[in-house]
Length: 404
Image (cartoon, rainbow, N blue to C red; front, side):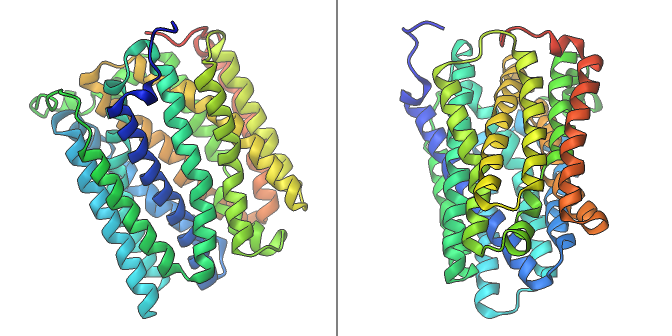
């Protein structure tokens, strides 16, 4: 990478993309905190925290192939705008229900199912816009800046959500609706001069092309599946309301800080990666980062100190973003633009499996074995997955550079 290449954040379309991503992610993180706290207060059960994750995962799993095909056939910006309007409307309904006092656990789960469907289309389509805003040679840096925007919102969002929760959930939901509308406006302001993707006829082969492409690239398959199983087992974020309320004995403000900590660590690391992109031994670096992720999860599960818990989550987030940037760069740089929607849809399904289904898994195991044992089992499982993947995907372990 040469010094003559401008930083992607200085280019107007990319700046608008970052702003839109920041606003939408801010809304999504605030929604996670608000819904998690509200449904736990209503039910008092970690099982329902898991159901919230399941409600977001199921649409992504069911709609993956349709999402990818739509993103490669239709105007990607239009798809993102429509999805964000739906998400804003859902947040407005949650606000109205909180004000009116008629919102039940069933209402929340149904609305989250609808919002999960919109997010299933929004996420991979938004990702498919990024490569067109940054030349291939600077994409790893662009991916790091995009990760920085995501992590900045992930820090600010839970904190704002926690503060607004002290006023009431309706205030938080109202702010979320405004942020989604703002993001939709910013996306509509991006002008790249490129025409919408050509609408190729739908066929069995074209719909499943994303799966076939990933399966034929062992390095990409290994990177995506490693992230899937590691976060599926090691994700403890769904149980943060339980830690905040029952174990660490903090209120909503404590939950907000706990949710901020992984994002703070990820933000610091993503800024470092934006300034000093990974150049060598990226496969080995990814495996080391996932091991650190698992160890940090175990430390968090054992901790009874609020500062130590924050530190463990900070390290967890820093390690996780290394894996995210490597995986994202591998997928985007090695995928032709005509297939990015379908490949990103499959990638998002894997990510959703590790995040939303991971939340469901955490809720179930916590109800079976207890909250702390569930986190410890997950952290240990993550480390075991790394050991297996090193032998199953030697090409990924030996990957040296992020390049086409």
